[in-house]
Length: 356
Ligand SMILES: *Cc1c(COP(=O)(O)O)cnc(C)c1O
Image 1 (cartoon, rainbow, N blue to C red):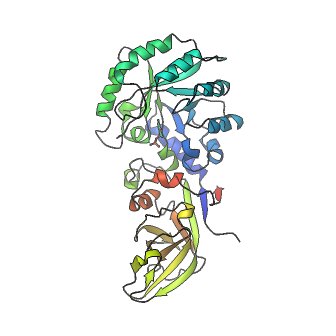
Image 2 (image 1 turned 180 degrees about the horizontal axis):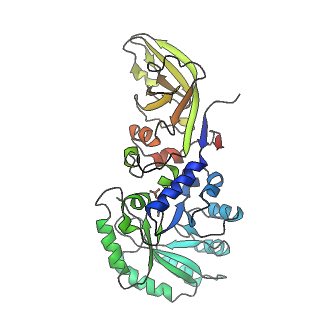
Image 3 (image 1 turned 45 degrees about the horizontal axis):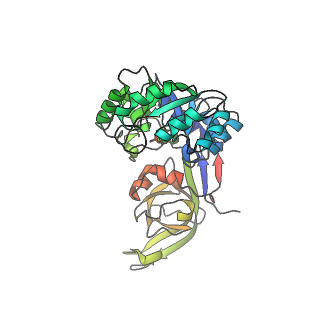
């Protein structure tokens, strides 16, 4: 038998979550964001469960080509656009909608020899200061683009830095309105947080990512606990060792944990080389043999120690859920000082993945 750690992907949860996103933004079309190999789930495994989407958004041309080769004929949005003028040949061949955020891209697009115009998402910098044109420049770029024969449909695009905050999109939305004034343009502004919590920002196309995979854009599961969203990924393993500690006994590297009395602990076959966060402290929630308990001591490369006090019947071979329906990935992430996004994306290649 192989090592017991596995990640199970529940494709019905993915379908469900796309429905929830649609219900949240009933008048918008949906770009399902599948960048970073579908947030670590594997684009090839999950894309067909999202087949009811209106389009896929990602940023790796290889992933876009994979979707085309698998037969996806609908729109594909390249969130960071083309990285070099030479990429436009592939964008043309595979009919990719491209974001446009820099002057050099406008020139490259004007000079490219394409078989047909490409649809363009003109990116406004609405205050996050990563990619995009300042609102003041949008009008002139827009007119410039309108005059380029290679430009098909034009959409205004922006991205929010603080959409999980109740007031987090007030200022950026005002900047986007300023940029869009007088332009008769379609808009795509909303990530998961804005899709869930800011209907005033939905417009023509929303771009949910993290909620499709059933984690919270705020990093707090409680924020989506009543939304109907369901976790897609479950990371499971088994107890492969048992230790009976006496008062003062240490556990794991750095002897970071010492038992205060007699204590039975289990050793789980999963560690940071599987994608479990090394920074998770003693007390991080874990589900063992049907019971909630917690980790103990440092996370090793291949093993995690867990407290078996609440589950005296657990033994070698008992099932362990590291995250999934019982233990929310957001709760593990927040214990470790990160977000569910990072844990999903960091699922290690050595973990076998099963889809159900
Ligand atoms: C990643 C990304 C999204 C999706 O963000 P979530 O928070 O996962 O919903 C949307 N738009 C852009 C431009 C992105 O890069």
